Image (cartoon, rainbow over all chains, first blue to last red; front, side):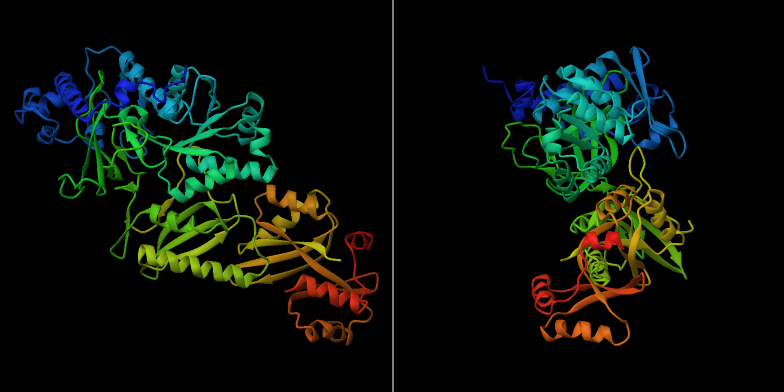
Amino acid sequence: MEQSNYWEPEIETMERSSLESLQVDRLKKSIQQAYKTDFYKQRLSSRNISAEDIQTIDDIRKLPFTTKADLRDNYPFGLVVTESNAVRLHSSSGTTGNPTVIVHSQQDLDNWANRVARSMYMIGVRKEDVFQNTSGYGMFTGGLGFQYGAERLGCLTVPAAAGNTIRQVKFITDFGSSCIHAIPSYAAKLGEYFQEQGIDVEKQTNLKRLIIGAEPHTEGQRRRIEQLLKVKAYNCFGMSEMSGPGVAFECQEQNGLHLWEDSFVMEIIDPETLQPVADGEIGELVLTTLDRDCMPLIRYRTRDLTRIIPESCPCGRTHRRIDRIKGRSDDMFIVKGVNIFPMQIEKILMQFPEFASNYLITIQTIDMNDVVKVEVELADLFTDDYTKLQALIKEATHRLKDEILLTPVLKLVDKGTLPQTEGKAIRVIDLREK
Amino acid sequence: MFVKQLSIFVENKSGRFPEILDILSKEEVRIIASSVADTSEFGILRMITEDNDRAYQLLSTNRVSVSQNNVLVLSTTSLAGSIGKLLKPFSKNGINIDYMYYFAAHGTGYMVLRTNDEAKTKEVVLRENMKYLTADDLKAL
């Protein structure tokens, strides 16, 4: 019998009208659940809003937003439904102020694992696969999130955790890992390591596909990773506030990420006016949980910038797609009145095969002037003619200027010398006096 | 006829030069000839070693941007006056010299040349019966 392309065909290909009425039903339940917390009880009742106010999915706009600041201000358990039986806690690093804490019941963990399994199945992972997870474990949800998802799918799962490239490669070759999850900067590093060591991925490993996520990255970065590792790399999206990975995931079309609308209501808003943008326009992603028992979140402002891809997908799934994350509304930096996103700079740098994939943007004040310095690692030296290197710097500077509207100082540095973190790569350092 | 040369990107920061040379000296890779071209932002160190493949591997795994390319090594009898003579056949045949550098060993001078046209260069060297050095010749120096 032919295997289905879907993990849960009846949900993944549900008619839009049925999906929307499912959302309305679940949204009502989520509001009732939220009322069991002190935070939402106060916030919703003061506005006289209850589950009865929701007739259609657009009625969600009657509800107030929830922000990261709300999570911090009510640290640690202000948004937790006390009657639910919490079994797991995840928390952000909390580099500024209180960390954000998300608490899960067993039901929450089961739903989450199922979403991850569904997502992995979508890109072709089957129980015969060996899945190696290079995420940090512990509090970082990319670790346990993928662990339980892959186990749910039935894969032999290798919790390699982050770092130690030599050991990762040994696992890949010894255990025959066929699917790897890595943040994009680490996937590129693995690929570059294979190349340096002269390891033929096609002959010496069983690698078939990669899952990359947790860091915004460009299409160019993805294609480079695919070239280095000679397999397809699928983009995944998630965040700890929405449990973790498995919120949205690319299908085999590699053209946008299906956001699981049986678990979340998505909206795209203008971060300034807070009004919905037109379908297909870029704005801030706002998510409401539909099946979270322990810690429902209503209209949570993710700060991630993306757009809805309104067209239907050839894969047959009816859950709408979001475009790859364009950056975070709080990653944006302003220099001389110009809004700049690190993704814009990455997009240009990735156009040059002469550069490796790691870069660092530093903004500093020199003689009362704000200067954007972009350091990029050189791949293997392509020429021994320094005039060609100078011409390369000039051309890249020119294209960067066209993109960000001011002229950066571009500096080539040796490969592997920019700071690389085990977690998310550091892309921007702002040294200006605040 | 051509021998391999390593070209190494050197970031303009203090200590980088000895750092790169240490990678090779620790593994006892002997450098036969070298030169540096520099700009205000970076330098390019060119060198021929007794085992370029090994040197390339060592540098590449130690975070150095490096490439290998072909150069021609010619011996010159006495330096003064002979270089012009040596180069004349190239210019006569429309071959440009991208760069060259000189080194000496055991009282003999050698010129390392990079031209813009390998095929034409080969023709000229054979026709003029120039004394060129192979990789093995260099190792024996």
